[in-house]
Image 1 (cartoon, rainbow, N blue to C red):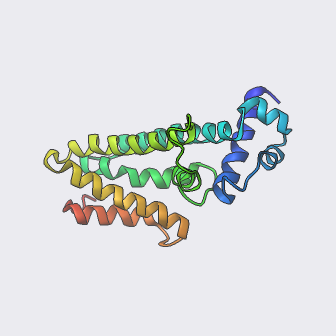
Image 2: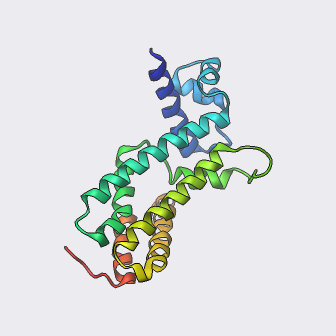
Length: 193
């Protein structure tokens, strides 16, 4: 097995275990076993459990951004580009490994705030996910209604966060679809299809 294949297997195993069973309770020995590698090999590739978590989050962030971009590009108009974040959630979940909900929210909920105590790349990636989400929504909202950018962003973010919580709860069945409908109504955009 090549170096890149080994790395991918480690990341796949860690992603699955961290975000279905929990980060804190998943030891590196469990990840190594699931990946079919030794703990020594895992450490050689990732350096530490924190390094492993950061690599998983970086890969997920890159994948998320790519899927969201695809959905934005496929959208029919400015309003649909804003609401493409909901289509992206559905598309991303269909392509990615099983997880109870958002890996970034899971990480933020499990890790204590360590700012000022040294670098925490995982929390930096959580921040990057948030900043990217807000920044991209602002950019897209400006193309729809420059006078109401913050209202549009706040509305979509509230509903997006609700989708992520709904995925954890398991209800409603299709939260992203419902959230897009609610966003349209709340923003007075009506239906275009």
